[in-house]
Image (cartoon, rainbow, N blue to C red; front, side):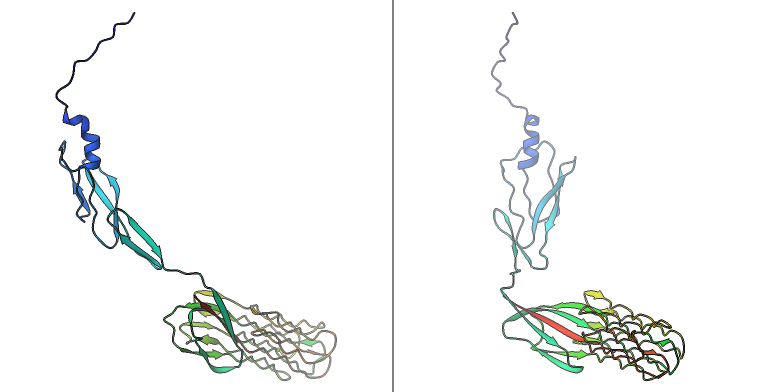
Length: 300
């Protein structure tokens, strides 16, 4: 049988036995970035104190020498930090919208957007105008290029927006008349070109004989999200005119294919005009469509 030995009562406790607990509890933080505890110190303090007001500090790590490094919880966009006596509270100020309305501005030239009552923030979508298609000379088998589609840009504005803001809607490029190129579409913007702007698509080409190149695409120039239209298709000798480029709203105008004739004008905002085809006579390219600005309004 194994003997069992009883240890006599211990009247003295070695302070080093309590050191792990002492490292965690016996320290007072006063807002400094670090606080060093003396080795093997024993204190009557058994809780960590609050570190102050405003942004909250928490323990990041403890070094082997007993130094505590702190990390700060800071406020950010839409987030407020409150350092309470016993805890740190994070509060979000963002509230989901309860209602939306929309204004669609399509008239070419300078316009004004008016802020509705109660509107807290808005989403802005800007579309540049489409390019016009090239025309064709009186040359058998000639096809002109379609106009390019306008670019696309998106921006947001919060409650700091003004009661009214300036808007400019780009004009669609006219189609080439006879043996001439189509005109470029112009840019659209909200507030100004530096804030949110999309450029217009380029005009389609007529080379006098053979195939005309399609107009290049417009692009988003300024804003948080930038996109592009598509380029116009080239004319194809013996087949017909090229199709107009598309925008974010819809597809470009079709080119003239079945027989000799003018190209089609674009229907959807920012789209390019369709190219013409000639089997002997001179014909005109289709016009590009004007740009557009869409303002979605959010209420809380």
